[in-house]
Image 1 (cartoon, rainbow, N blue to C red):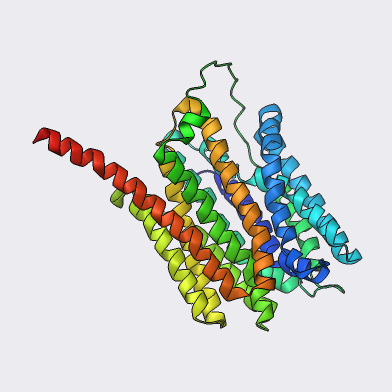
Image 2 (tube, rainbow, N blue to C red):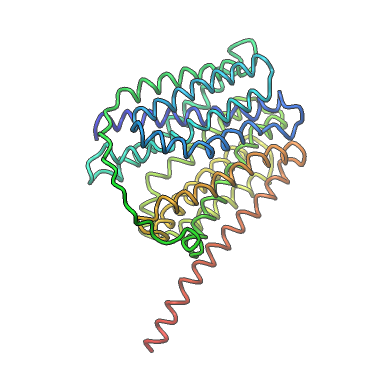
Length: 396
């Protein structure tokens, strides 16, 4: 444990605060400004698309300027996007709001690297715990984000104007925190011609297919239901404070299991843990379909967060079996592309479905990716059992 790790955990908490507030307000602001109701979650989609488009830029900035400068650049972009969002609310300009969220995607792509930086700030024997500590900083966002959105919603003349201005303050705090961290010097980079197998060959492996499907579909289901929840609760006549509370428990469900998910994988194996994530997603949908009271929204979204954690952590662990060290960059990029593409699609679909077809049909539709994920896990488990049986037969 050291001062730098605590500060990076605080930066992670501020990053998740930004994410949670964006999730809580962008769909509602989009609904109030959009020319058509089905366009309400385009600002949420813009955040995801902006992140996907920024991954290459972020990688180059990290290589050129190092961790601290690149992270500070990301926070300056967060400040700019928050002020642009405030201007969009003030002017009632829907497309300016979409532009603000696309810009904010650069900060999202930057913040995703905080967990990797954690391992560089700790002694080698403590790296896994350091990553867990920084990820656990997301719980700060689970508490601070919804409360910030709730208390700033009507702080100024126009609804949610205060929320975007508050995010500008959060970005400034992040700049101070990152500025206080002493990152280690960047290692010298050597040219290595080894690139391993072609990407197509890596992607044809059953273990890669299931890992990519688990990560993408798990993220997709989570994003589909999470982005639509504030809209659905507003249609049900619930106050914004209730939606903020539901999102708070959803984010707690996403990050709190991180303290023990790794131990469960070591004890029971990766496929059973991922299967538990599928079961939690199915249970979430069943509860969501049982009624539209606050308790049902809250419990469903909490289970959705836990299901995401089990699936995403398991998929990440499973993916490590699919590539060699020299292949990790292109393999991880391919998986991330699948995740970002699915998130962009579900961000758009959630608003279109919940505003035109309703909350129940949205949940029924979510059963398809949940079922596909479960079938993928059963397929991989069956393939792994077959060689084992053949080996026993040969021995007999």
